[in-house]
Each structure stands twice: as structure tokens, then as C-alpha cells.
Image (cartoon, rainbow, N blue to C red; front, side, top):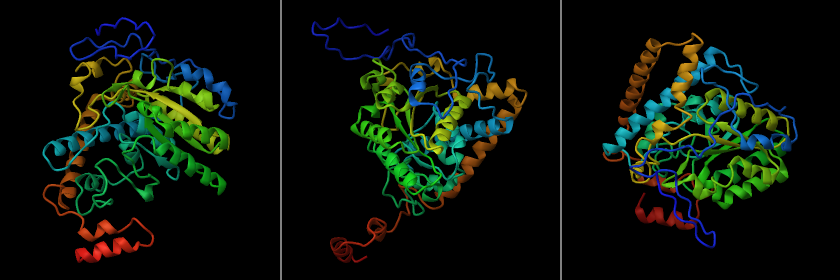
Length: 413
């Protein structure tokens, strides 16, 4: 256990995580008891009627793996199996892509291990026509919208078929036809963009919800607060998701103020409807997203949701989490693994078993491998081919300015 430093006479404090490398993981100071008995307010309620939920933890799956309580979305077994399928697909895809990065076939990668329910459950609860402004680690949204896996891989490989033509880092996907806005490496930019999109959508009279995701560390950015102000004042149909996965690269949640109050509680000051949910409980994430979407679609404004989860893998392939947290901390996470929990729930319902689980695991492995072989046929970042040089001048301006035309002429392309 990390020793607590003596308090400074002035009260000045530098927050420290509960455990460092070599320590025993310790989450005893965290309020991580998901409550399946919490009341579910009417989506048409006043925002202040949700404020108590900002300091609790909404859950659906109980200790016996049964779905219970007012927040139970009553998903049928087919939908639950689809959720399990998509989460497993996301994890297997991530594992393959990490291996390829280590082999030098792509420059960079970020896994979503342990956070699959955050994206997949939300993706299933939203409509396809709803606009999403994700951060990295929401690749499950793409799978939930049936994005072609080969196209995703070609982007990560930065090859000749990359729909971003090598201009973006791997995992910074975009998919216009899937209503999936370009992922930005600059933190929190997607929040005000999502609010602005929702404002425009509402002004046009469209029946569309906009949703966005940032990490808990990004709530310290000015863009977060600007977005919350606009969401509070104009009441656009937007869902603002804060993914509290405990670590912003090597800085734990306390550096962003997570020890002073919940991240959901930040919505209270803006008068936003606020919910805090167990992010590893698939039906619970589905339920809160469904609630917020219903509220938004009815013209009742924005909802801020904190999804409490854990980043089980490194922040990215440029990161070594063993330098700042215990190696076995992920296994000690009290809210468990989202895939294992949904699997156990389906087994408890008599709708799944180990044999089918293993068969699906094997089938998805083969699907991912086949997709990669096809994607590799279009090239890799190391071996090419890559997008032709003239493409660097395209798709940026509606009308190309003179200085770019001159540069292209000088290159002779």
C-alpha cells in the first residue's frame, strides 16, 4: 500500500493513487457498490430529480447474475447474445491489432479491454441515424453499427484503402455513412462539437439524438465545461458520456478531481440530468443510454452520464502501465469483466453455455484473421502501398486555395 504523505501545513495536496507498482491493489476507498434497487425516474422528470443518482451507482445485474430492479431494460436473450457477440468481437479484434502493431505493420494502437460494454451497449441502445462523437476506445460503436472490419483495419494499417488516406492515427476512425464523427486526438474537442451538432439538429426539427464520449481526465479540459454550459442553456438532444476508467494515461482519476466528487456530480452545477452507472454491467449501460435518448428525443434536453469502468490494458502501445500501477490491478477491479458478467447472466438464464462460448470465440478469431489477410492485401504502413501523394491535397477545402495548388504544381503531381 502506498504510504500517505504527511499533510502540508497549508493544506496543499498532491493526490496519490491507492496503489503503485509492487503494492497490493486496493479499491477499498472507492464507492463501487452498484445498486440494483435504485429508482428509475420518468425520462420526462425535472433534471433535479436525477441529482441523487449522480452519487450512487446504477446497476442491473446482481451477485447471482440476474437482471433485476427498476433499471432492468428487459432485453430479450437474442439482444443479450448480440451484445456478448459484439463485445467478444471487439476484444478479439483489439488483440489482433495489438499483435500487428508489435510486428511493425502499423504505427500505433489503443485497446478497449475491460470497457467493451461502454460502447457496445450504448451503440445498441441508440438508433443508427443518431450521430456519435466518440473518443478512442469506442470501436465497439462501429461493430454495433456493422462497420466493415476490413475497412477499419485498412485505416489502422494506413494503406492504399485507408478511408482517411494516412492522415489520422490508427484507431482515430471516421465513418460518415455510419454517422460516426472523426475521432480527435485532442482531448475533449468532441463534446462541444456534439452539443453544436445537436443544437443544429434540433433547429432543423430532426428526430436525432447526438452522443459523445470522453475520459474522466478530459473533464479537466475547458471544452468539457463549455459543452456543459451550452447543453444547459440550449437544451439540445445530446448525451454526454464520461468514461471513468480510473486512469488518464498515467494520471489516476484523483488528479482530475475524482476524489472530491463523482464525475457525474459535475452535471449538477449545470442543471443537467445526471446518471452514474456501473460501466461493466451491459444491461445497465443499455438502460441509462436508452433513458437519456428517450429524454433527448422528447425535447427535454441533455443528460450527463458517468460510466464507472476500468482500463485493463495500457493506455496505448506507447504506454507501460506497469510503471505506475500494480500489474494485477485489473484482476482486482470490483466491478469485474463486462464480457464475463454478461456471459454468466446468459448462462443463468439458460440461454448460453461454455460450449457455445468457446465456439463463438473460435469463430470470431477466424473472422478477424480472415479480415486481416484481406486488409493486408491492400498494404501496410511498413510495406505499402499507401495513398498516392496527390491525395494529401484533397478533401480538405471545398475550393483548393492558391498556395496548395502551387505546392502541388511544384511537386509535379
